[in-house]
Amino acid sequence: MLLDQLHDERGRRVVLVSHCLLNENTRYAGGATRPGAVPEVVEELMNAGYGIHQLPCPERLAWGGVLKPHSLHLHHSKGGWLYPLRGPLLHAFVLWTRLVYRRLARQVARDVADYQRSGITVAGIVGIGASPSCGLTTTLDMRASLEVVASCPAAALTRDVMTERAVLGCRREGEGLFIAALDRRLRRRELEVPALEHDLAAELRGSRQTVLAVGAVRTLGALGQRDTPPSGGTPH
Image (tube, rainbow, N blue to C red; front, side):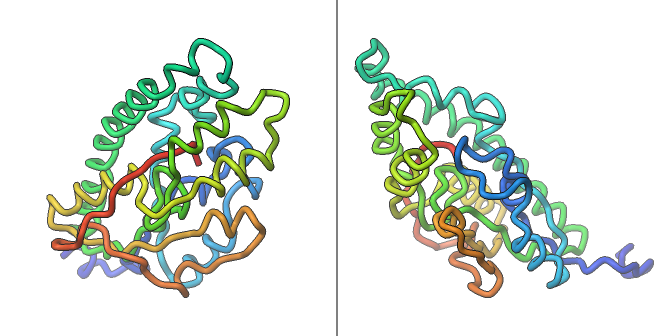
């Protein structure tokens, strides 16, 4: 192998990291706790000798941009003509999201395969607990979260309402839509990646975390592993 022949200083270990852990500018409005990256995550991985591969932000790509405008149409809609249509609109929104996420998952699975063919170990993927897209063991109840933001008048929507009621108050067990798509794609390629979870709820409440110390919460792509029902919710 070329790397064995030339033998440079690379560690040959990389971790795939959810986009917003390196760039909180893509978080949902009200959800950023840092100006940019989450330093304790970056420092922990760097100090352990891992390369950091930033995953695409699936919600930015599927929901219209950095502020996810496609996800905002039903905000403050109670009393208006859109509110009675929220069920069918939500269904269509989720179908579109899954379509985009399948395409993104194919690309990420190709990246994993490329690393492995090149002699570089993909040592893990760091997801976001409570994220509707990147959650590994916890996600959001999309319908419940939508009811919060649809029923809240525009003037009453505060950071506290968004964080405590629409996000933390609507958590439930399950995996996010992007993680579900990636898990399926990795299985098809017979690839396995340990998955670690950064707890969004703990971050929002001011707790520093160490994902490596906690260890993997599951393995993506593991053949024979029972599926976790995917869910969705407000953008992270």
